[in-house]
Length: 361
Image (tube, rainbow, N blue to C red):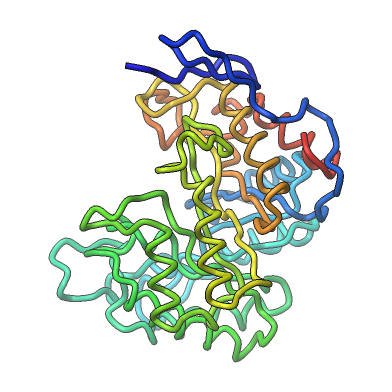
């Protein structure tokens, strides 16, 4: 069986056929003909960062600034902030917002997850990823967040990966999500009329009867009439182990398939709206889905170049800043640009170079 094995940063070998195909990725440092905006990269942190102590939080922000990225994305976790109905703990979120914005970073606030008291009671095995029983209750929280951070956060992503059962329990439902998005965006705009609303970043998936593919989800979201409720389409275009630009994997490569999502946007009259890749990266280690550190860097380089070449991907948030643990067999612990000891992987050098050149890398 023909197998794809990646060699250097620009070669793919088709084993068994003796063919070497070189990619068109420019050499590191080669500038694009047209430079992109200087604020087109960010870091998606994931959960847990609002509970760090101040010195740890400051180090996180300094590491992001050192990468040259201008944006930070993190959870405004309703299930934590209002774990008891009517009682709010904004302290950790306040500190991270202040630490980030004081350093000059822009914040993309991810409003997501449901406290136990607000979950759909019909879901037998519920957790914080269970959809809210009432979208208006979620919208109330979103409006409070927008009001509280009106002077510091103006970009809001509504939910995380709503096309997956794992993140929209008991099952993804476009109509339900459209109601959630509509209610939340309306509430946010009451205090921030000019807020940027990003639809929930969609995960790579197939239409398997449980999860919904990003292309289908976006098409159905427009059919549900939700187009006016968002300013930006959120996407998580993970492509590993393939390069984002690899047309041979276009049947499943979610980065490559953003072209189809763009077609859907144009068909619905949203020619001026962009896609934000609110999570993108690849895991290192020795797990079944892992890539080498060299390939992680290659995927990031190719993804940043592709985003700039395609033109409709306005921002790329790299997931994530640092490995979350030392178990190299666990994919979720190894997406970092920094390893668990805070040492940079080659992918960090790619991001730094991208932010310095303002063009292709």
